[in-house]
Amino acid sequence: MATKSAGPSLANIPSIGHSGGVANRDRNSSVPLDSVSKAIIEQLQEDGRRAYATIGKAVGLSEAAVRQRVQKLLDQGVMQIVAVTDPLTVGFTRQAMVGINVEGDIEPVADALAAMDEVDYVVCTAGSFDLLAELVCEDDEHLLDMINKRIRALPGVRRTESFVYLKLRKQTYTWGTR
Image (tube, rainbow, N blue to C red; front, side, top):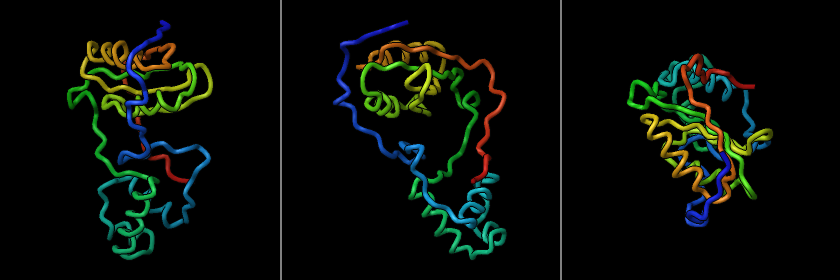
């Protein structure tokens, strides 16, 4: 369904750069990682609560050196350490991916989406959609409100298409490093 809005200006929405997570990173910008940093990341991907002393033994560093490296990786936005929950078990019964077509510059729309609490994932894409946003909502009414009153109301949003999740078959964060 195509929509145009004379709603709120994106000028009033703060630009998002880094809000505590891995965010707003260009595909071509990477932080050079040595083999030890990569090994630390892989240890934490297996178990985000693994003790620094245990990691140190596995990678050949002291506990203090591991702590310092982990902090640097966090500060550089290379990784984040978070508790990953199953949304269903914490009261969010509806998830959806929303494909969004934008008229004009996609960056302000992407920033506005990233500022919404219900949106946990925003990517600029090539293909049928300009943006993809994953929403985590309490129920269908909440999802409808998000799409109809908040996303479609953003200036520049031309069209949306929703992909409601029926069942999650796989979600992993252990892809390692290269």
